[in-house]
Amino acid sequence: MADGTCTEPDCELTRHKSGKGRCGKHYVKALRSGQLPRQRGGPKTCSHNGCTDPYYSGGYCRPHYEWWRKTGDPEKPTLTVEERFWSKVDKQGDNGCWLWTAALSNHGHGRFMLDGQCKSTHRLAYEWLVGPIPDGLVLDHQCHNNDPTCWAGNDCLHRRCVNPAHLEATTQQINNLRGHNNGAKTHCPQGHPYDAANTWVNEKTGHRFCLACRNARNAARCRKAA
Image (cartoon, rainbow, N blue to C red):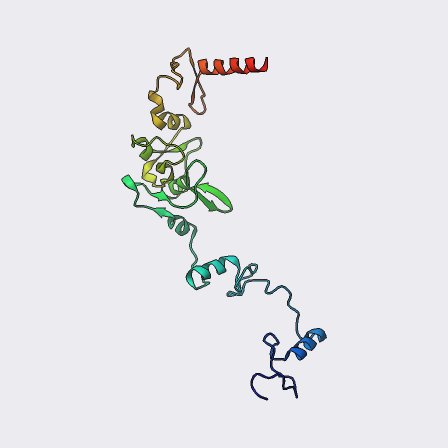
């Protein structure tokens, strides 16, 4: 029997490209008789080294396919959680900041997936390199407090810093007062004084509220409802 012909006895027809060595006629016959299993919709799982993840493209699951597409090799190196974390940190930031370079929250803090949950990166770095954060305390970025040119906001680079040497565990009240030098402000944005008669302080967060502004808002709501 010549190369490229059907493997069935006495058949000289050309092999079908998907016929498992048979010509098109004998391939269809083998499928109908049950000699060959029917495959519908292509492969169901990844073909890489026993991976059982669902098939995505090119014979691989999505992670193996994406890695193959980027590097030419579907074998993606296995990283520990901490190796994966620190691979996303740039330790060459200004003034010794270690800047998170991956996903950010709406407020500009780094975010990292761990055990199916989205964690704050500066808290993770502190817990790994320093220790647990005491209950009731938050982490204050000292690099921000020491930079008079930065006025915070969601674009503040200090919020991305994960250097534990720049982080201090403190109360939420102290953290709020330090931000933007809030503790030194003597008047609200409308010019009313932050004195004992005109100020209400939230004991939990430390935020100060102007009573004159609150009374003005309440009066405006009453007029609108009347």
